Image 1: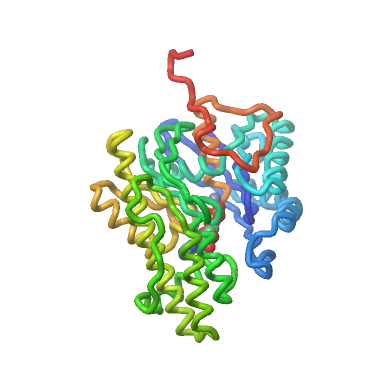
Image 2 (image 1 turned 180 degrees about the vertical axis):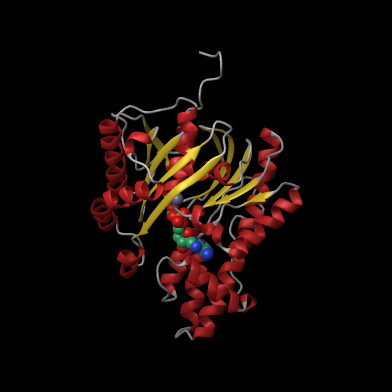
Length: 352
Ligand code: KG4
Ligand code: ZN
């Protein structure tokens, strides 16, 4: 089964062709990702209008490149998948409309993929991870702990009540004069800094529900930075280190609690899976590894290129749905908001 996947929910224009064999094994035949980061850098964050316009201009070329790289024409594929949300609505409209046009002209089924579901199912593409597993998804827009019980069957165990972790990294970077997206730069400086120099808060630590809060940490960091301004390079590195140490402590405590809630409700997970851009952070990964070791479950993190946004994860989620006969009609709407719990699991065999 060959599926074309299209991703345009944020600032990456991406397309990919993925093959899913009958035994559930996945192979990426092409994966073209064009980042708009440079076009948004001057604004310290993604500007929705700029993003939508850039997707319109480049998506056709990105899809063509993905098809050429896979050595296929549209007639050979079995389905067209696009991220139909959640995300910046202008970009989502561009991707979904393009997918509809291809599906209509090539007479192939359309699969409207939830972007979060695509992150949630990625470990099955990269590692063949069986259900059920516990997902920690941390990106620029999302911070969630999710019980992944099957295709379309997700239970959110925890989420952030304010900023996403990636957003906190990006805002920290902006505050310290570092470029967007901030994660990689803050991480590099954190490695050279002295975390103990500042004592920053760890909001929500020890709470029974595995939720997150980042805005208090961000504010505390800003106050410290203002107190010692002007900042030297050493100051910036120390602030980055203090920020990242707090983030890792928060992640470790919250995910540990999330795994405990998972076990109470659904039994033992097959794995702790980390996804989203923040999961490419080495300190965060090491923290998650400690949590998984303590719980006696394997920690799985897809390679960084598949943790961040790309077309292969959309194509794969599309292939998993197509294999179950879950397709969408051409009237399906793009959605800015689309919580994972609103997806309906496939009907049980023999059921209604
Ligand atoms: O998953 P992603 O590519 O896009 C979405 O937001 O959906 O995640 C991007 C986010 C940005 O906020 C970026 O700063 C953060 O992930 N990020 C990192 C690192 N690399 C990317 N955060 C911390 N450490 C990193 N190494
Ligand atoms: Zn994403």
